[in-house]
Image (cartoon, rainbow, N blue to C red; front, side, top):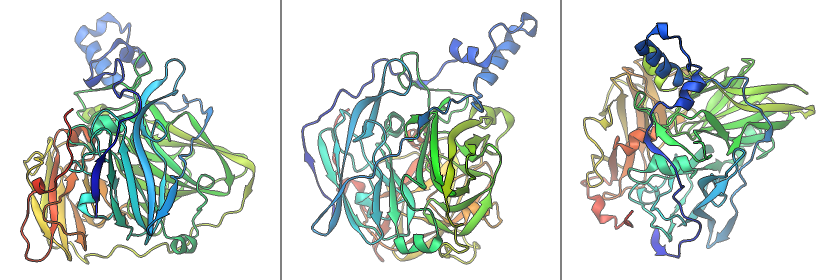
Length: 531
């Protein structure tokens, strides 16, 4: 049971960065210069030059332009202790600064480290308690993305942590080994909090399963976290939170941070390395592959391992999605992990304005002169999801349109529907218009049944909690509600492009005991504080 939020003195420097810009962005001279359009011949005409400037200023291509001159930072494992049979971890959200580029340090937010946070690592079967202190001057929350847990522990917008307060959620870990994560989820300000740096990995381990799957498992050596974010910096080295109205997806940055490192390289010491990829960006979609188009084994997605390795050369992740890949290297070689232009399913103009033409160098892998032998992943990794045999029924439909779901905007006081504990439902999700969206459900992992009426591709056949929704392609998913009923405490479903989430593209549902009716989130007694 969640313990009450306690008051505590706030610590740390002020959380407002001087000169930080937010909101829709104008086309600046700097952007035009980067696009190479100053001095476009007058014969093209003012209108044509202006159109070209807007078009080219929205493209980002860093291929071959990144100096991989900094070792990849590896987030430390969170310190844990045992109290009363619980595995206890302390986290503190604080403001700080980080030297990303020459010049003035950048004002950041983070958990314990000034930017991002430690990796929380637990075993299946553990009972955990996370003591989260808010050392910021803004209220925030911490959502445990992908975790199966009671709604009152979920860290959504109802579990606000006031400045100086401590929140102590606790629950039992009862789900397969997976790469999960934690991030802020305050109502209307999630993008701002996440962009400043509040995020970290949450790894669930199942040692017998990992051993049987023959996967690299030495954290920071051959099992590597890869938290990818895109940022824009202003002329004073502060995060620029402006965004283009043309794309209307939010911030698309021109500089990548990997685990908070600009231009990172990784020294590889084994023949195979496992990369845990997390798209922690607020808006950008990545399509990961390698600079030489080598293949790799996709072994896991959002909610855990696939049933078998999928050999491929690309994996696409929208904001919030994760993938685990195993790639083989030979001694002495170097290869670059790259994000190729993503497949968004849009028309050429919308593709351009939403990052669909962007190619980005991410991380350089440097293989040592001698590499320790590493076996290939096992042919069988984990049981395949099997919640529903067919997709011939639909229990609920969700239409993602504009900044609404089913024609409704988020209302903190409205619970949209209830589901009965112990049941499995089939949901159909579709985005009918040419605008990028994705779909995330709190508190569960689900099975994709069909994509556009056909079976899902191999990369979507594992457990998922988030997926991209290209226009006019219906997705059917099977969602099981086995536990954690509470008629008053809702879980969220929403678009995980955080600008859209903050524009109220979100709804709420509760899990009910048989015969119960939907309650009211007003009975939660959550903590609030004025901004």
